Structures are given as structure tokens and as C-alpha cells.
Image (cartoon, rainbow, N blue to C red; front, side, top):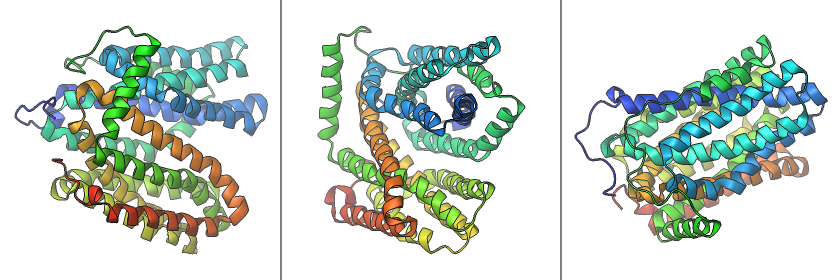
Length: 407
């Protein structure tokens, strides 16, 4: 824990480097949102196949799962600031090829498949370096505020991003890709070093495997982080299935596409509120109490998805359920980043992200089959039971109950 800065606190928003880091992340996130809508629409326009569009989106998730652990090891070994800059340049170059080849009349599916995979790899590497760098940008006392601010701004962008993405695509199929290219090339003029020390920049595959093993071994020896990571993976399994489930429940209530979008906007607004409340609540309540509260709140709220008789009541449920998760996530991320040595942050963060992302991907794939097999209302109750099991597990775990920010 002694590798975090401990200088006297300043107003977070007056810290030049944090503002640059936050601004760069938000611009890149907006570019990602524009492209995430434009890419499948472009594939459908080129091929008329929703299956091909799904494959393109799936390739980015597969890249994350396959490359996640390696990305964390590289983020700890390479200079993080330089890594982030080159990832931005690489992603910008890749996305810039879309409008260029389209203008030349040679845009095709092999190129879009390659862009999906390579963008996924660079995004994973960028994320590992970025999340590992934050504790070196802000002071220890500002870490929870910084995480909450990033969450709040990110959720605000979620609220308006879908509309902006649709508008950009309506202006022209290539507009979102052109924007993304510009956003990725906005290099950050941050003065602070993104890490305190690192090993040699080059590494053999054996070195990388040894580094990954060292990170996983450290993680396994930390019972609080390990236990909460496993509980998060279980929650992510439900989250992956829940996205499609909410869509199907809204359609059963005869909600049109606009109303379905409003339902998910309600979730984003709830998450925004949770992010705003997070700094005060994480200072007041122990980490374990926040974890148990979040899981019980989700378990008790989830059955109301099946009981909501109208789409606007479904909106209220999504709002209510989405408030608690950001509060817990800020508390957990603050704790994890605080206790993890700087030289291991990339590997530990990537290992946890790979675990939770993999669980969410499994939930997404299984969700469709289970909806067909059981029906949406029945699956809602099954997932509520799963959340109850996770909440009971957390409540009965002494490791979770006694977890505090000073463990």
C-alpha cells in the first residue's frame, strides 16, 4: 500500500493530469460507442446478415478473453503511458481505414473482421495500462473520488451516447469511424509517470507466462480480493443473461424499440446516481458491508422484472437495481488498487476483468437458450434465486463480512 502517493490532498478537479486522463478516456469512450453501433449496422448494410454482425461483435469479446492476461503482464512490463499512446494511434489508424477503403470502393468483410480483432486486442492493452496508472495520477485520499468521477462521467456518456451514435450514423455511415480515428489520436500531455518501476521492456513468452503466474499467485493469496472476485464473476454471469432478458421482458409488455432504449437509459441514470453517491458511502461503510448490501439489493429487486406490468415500471426496476452496483464497485476498486503493488496492478486487474468478462460472456450466450427453454419470466426467477445464493454466500463468509478498506 505504500506505493500510492500520499501528498496533501488537493481539489480533484484542479489536478491537471487527472483532468487530462479523464478527458482522454471520455473522448475514447464516445468514439467506442459510436463505432459499437456503426460497426454492426455497417456489416448488415454490406451483407444483409445479422449473423455476420454478431460474429464481428463476438470477435472483440473473444480477443479480450484470449489476450486479457497477456495484456496485464505487458502493461506492467512496458511503459504504461507510451503503451496507451501507441494503442490510441493503432486504434485510430485501424478505424481510419474504414472510411478510406469505403471511399475507394474496396471495403469488405475480411477487413472488418481484422479490425474487430485488432481493435479488441489494443483496447484490452489500453484498459490494462489505464486502470493500473490511476493510483499514480491521484493521491490515495482522492482515489475513490477519482474512480467515482470516472464512473459518473462514463455513465453520463452512456445516457447520451446512444443518441449521438445514431445521429452520427444517420449523417453518414462513415462518420462514426472518422470520429473514432480523431479521438484515438488525441495524445495526452500528462506529466506524471504512470508507474513507479518496471522490469525490462522486452520479454520472452516464458517471461510473460512467469509474470502472469506471479500475478495470479499474488491474487490467490489475498482472500478478500479473491473471494470478492469470485462473487463478482457470479454476479457477472447473471448480468450477461440479464441484458437480453430485460429486452425480452420489455417486448412481452409490447414496448417499442424507443421504449426499450428508455428502459436502459433508466439503468444508466441509476448508475450515474450511484457513482455520485459512491465517495461519501465508501468512506462511511466498510467494503464487506457494501458488498453484502449490493448483492441483497440485487436479489430482492430482480424478481420485480417478472412482475412489472408495464414497460415504464420495468424502467423503475432497472433504475433501482442499477444504483447500488457503482457504489460497491468504487469501494472494491479503491481497495484493490490501494493494496496491489504498482508492479502487479496490470496483471491483477486484467485477471479479474478476464474472469468477470468471461462469466458475462457465458451468461449472454446461455441467456438466449434459457429464455427459449424456460421463458423470460421463469428465467427471471431463476436468476433471482442465483443472486440470493450469492448474497447468502457473501453474508456467511467471514472474509467478506470483515473486509474493510484497511485490510
